[in-house]
Image 1 (cartoon, one colour):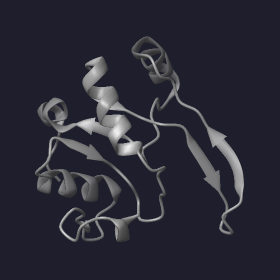
Image 2: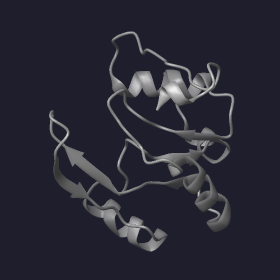
Image 3: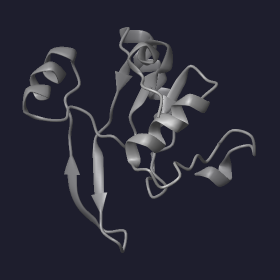
Image 4: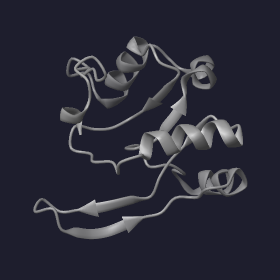
Amino acid sequence: FAEALPADALTVVRGGGKGLAHALNVGLGQVETRYVVRLDADDVIEPGHCREAVRWIRDHGVAVVGCPVVVVDGGGEQIGTQVYPVWPEDVAYALIWGSALSHPGVCFDLEAVRPVYREG
């Protein structure tokens, strides 16, 4: 994925060994774009995912969108699927029981998230 992007389109941010939350907050502190897609180094996204995620945010007036996840083993074989809720009322209900979004692949409008963002 990264090889297909212009050299200045992707920035790798390292958190200094202080944990995932710290690394994510450090990365958010360096973002200069309105929309953010969060991926781990071993994540793969489908072509067009970023475009569709931003379109969904704009068209539906939401701050964050997720996606279903295909789980693969070390050999690249599919071993499962995780599906997450789509509509706000379903997301709210899912939050009662746990996470309503898959962390990898989540896309959000940073302008909407900044008021609750905590610097790492």
